[in-house]
Length: 422
Ligand SMILES: Nc1ncnc2c1ncn2[C@@H]1O[C@H](COP(=O)(O)OP(=O)(O)O)[C@@H](O)[C@H]1O
Ligand SMILES: [Mg+2]
Image (cartoon, rainbow, N blue to C red):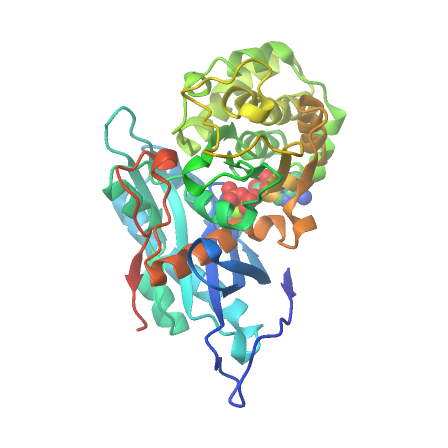
């Protein structure tokens, strides 16, 4: 699946950029779903918060079943040797390099990226709380990507934030701020990948007014249960068709909503450690005793995602709260008037394809417009890669790109380490 937009840059006779007005960057993302690699190429004009971004190309490559199983095993605690981690690091580096090359081959020469932003594949993310250190690991050797593409690569974005005391996630909020800041509309940019995470960009707010946190599971529990009910044949509930046939098992859902994670305040991040295979394995018995119909399990997991998204908005985002906003958790943008229009939700990530999930979310947020980012010109599945391409450009410019209030970092830094052209 690839889409090319031929945008009109100022191209000189040699086909190289001559004015420096436009820069092209490529982002490489492999999320906690373990579904594969997304590459996105963007065209950037300007810098810092004034950066104007145009989507150019999305190239997506799925991991084959064997590789995916190795990855999922590496993400589950205590099942993987150091040797296997080192092998995955090397193989992922090559996989990222191949996907980047395939994306670049689809571009006209003049649109060749000047830099690659490599998010890497997170295999471990243990957020530190109350001053304790965050432990996080992303695989995929950046030097291999640099060697295979002949381009400089910015990588280890998360480690940079962790180095200054942050949780290393979420890192897309600064890019969401750049993309969505508006005087009149507040945006909740909701990514539904393996995990769900939101960036709240309040109308008229500044970067420091952005609130962002993990809402809870995205597709991870759904995918895990679909794999179990199909004996490993299916990876996902395509378009939410299975969930649409099931009924929500309220007693099971009530238990899940009691997890301590949902009581935590931002900054909060989570990953496969909480909602991965161990969760699915542990909860299967509970689901089986509540219903023998697997579609009911999927409907319940889908409602879990929808309800935890909506509940976290009501708790932490002032526009959605039915009671007086909690001062510690939801900060009103400095100097901003109340939004003139109702807040909008824009969905990104593969979960935005799940129609049952969207209708459950709409039922939870009546009156709130919910759109997908495709309607704004970026394929939903490419959005995170777009963000990492933006972060790579920000790194070249030295633009601070973490939001300390979001990650818990002690200061703002320009995220990422640079591997120069090899
Ligand atoms: N057509 C679809 N219907 C339902 N779910 C989908 C569809 N396409 C993708 N997904 C879900 O999206 C996930 C991948 O989303 P992605 O944004 O890549 O997440 P991550 O960043 O965690 O890899 C898949 O694992 C699947 O659960
Ligand atoms: Mg993915």
